[in-house]
Image 1 (cartoon, rainbow, N blue to C red):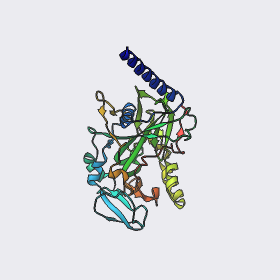
Image 2 (image 1 turned 180 degrees about the vertical axis):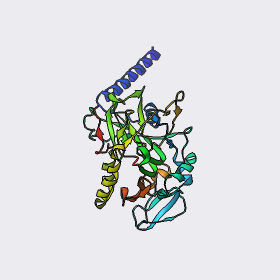
Image 3 (image 1 turned 30 degrees about the horizontal axis):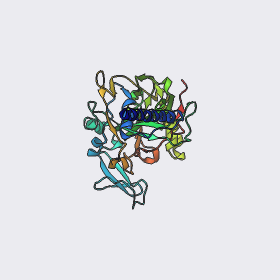
Image 4 (image 1 turned 120 degrees about the vertical axis):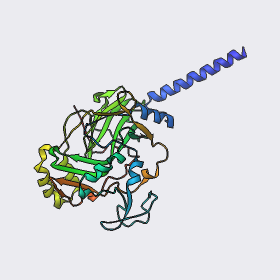
Length: 351
């Protein structure tokens, strides 16, 4: 009799616990996610990536880039001097911003030839890498326009390309920089139900409701643009809004020059996509992406306070033309790993 009574108490405790979990979920409060839970979400929503046949730069682990890149410090305005490792993780003691940058042993102003020679070292279609992290969204965070529900988690992915090599049709316009970071985000509510996906593009991006996202099971499909690595929900040639991006990053005095140069080839400024290379979460018809979970302590390079390129270059025709202070004359910065707000400049795709 005592054994049966104990069994009954255990059952009641279990029922109460389950009911408590259900009530907690129904009230909109979420359980604390363990590291294993977060990793499972990263695996569940990892994107499937499609690339153009001419794409030379696969998403890779940062270490490939760091083995070749030189660490430089800005010792006077516009003057960069090589410095010794290790990679810094703060700007303490610096008087100039940025204080540090990483620079591949190729000169942007010399064109693409040097980068094409090192592509085999800096790119590897057999060992593609994707970085991921699950972030908690603070209560009260506004949702993108047109999106229903409240995001509780952002399942965020970052892709690193050693080189951004975008060209217009006929190679009349060429834009390039080293160390290209792109990101993909899936937003979940408190019950881990997807609400929307957000893809980075040229100094902006697009948000689309989950019901309208093309998927392979739970994995969003992403068409990666040739050279620029902008991310698209559909396989169409898309305007890059290149001039708007240039305006955002050049001094006011240079805008008329930028408008003239870009206007020469405006009709050809589109992103092209394709399906020749397929990278995804599983093997089979595609190459598996290696997921690196950044949920634990960030590696040193993840806390690098500098820039990942000597700058950004715009060419028109065969004559190199450098805008003054394109993106302040600087390359991409280290991603903000903890940001939970979808940038205001990302527009909601209503299609």
